[in-house]
Image 1 (cartoon, rainbow, N blue to C red):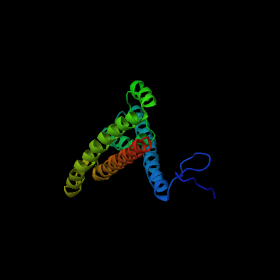
Image 2 (cartoon, rainbow, N blue to C red; image 1 turned 60 degrees about the vertical axis):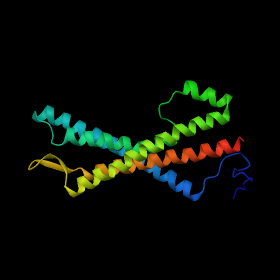
Image 3 (spheres, helix red, strand yellow; image 1 turned 90 degrees about the vertical axis):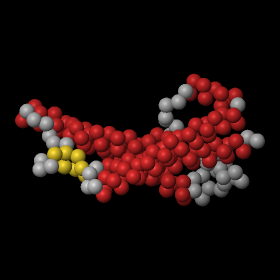
Image 4 (spheres, rainbow, N blue to C red; image 1 turned 135 degrees about the vertical axis):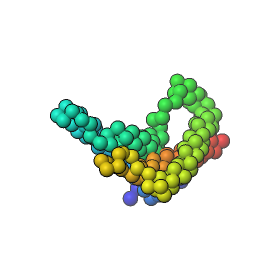
Length: 185
C-alpha cells in the first residue's frame, strides 16, 4: 500500500484516484470501447453490402439508414473519452503558451471552455430525452415494412447516454479547473 502526501498524491507525485473516479473512468472508457466495437460492426455491414452489390447486383436492406444511425451513435459514445483525454479541437497555438505564462488565467480560460462544453452537451442530452420518448412511444423505426425494419430508440438512448457522459466529463474538468485556480491563489 502506497502512502499519500497531504495533497492526495503519492511520494512519486502521481494523483491517486478514488473508487468513484476509477468507476467513472471505466464507464467512460467502456462507452468508448462500445463505440469502437460499433465501428467494427459498421465496417462489416459496409463490406457485406459491397459484396452483395457485386454478387447479386442489389444493396442489403437498412445499410444506409443503419449506417447513418451507427455513425452518430459511435461518435456520441466516444465523445466522453475524447473530452477526458483533452483531444477536442482547440486553438492550442494560443492556449498552451498562454497557460504556461499565466497558469491562473490559463486555468480560468480552460475552465470557461469546459463550462461551455458542459452546458452545450448537457442541453443536447436534455433535448434528446424528448426524442427518445417520442421514438419509444411511437414505435419509430427505420427501413421498409415487410422487408427489414429496425427500431430507432436503442440508438437514440445510446446517443443520449453518450452526450450525458461527455457533459458530465466536461463538468469534472470545470471542477479541476476551479481547484487549479484555488491552488494557484
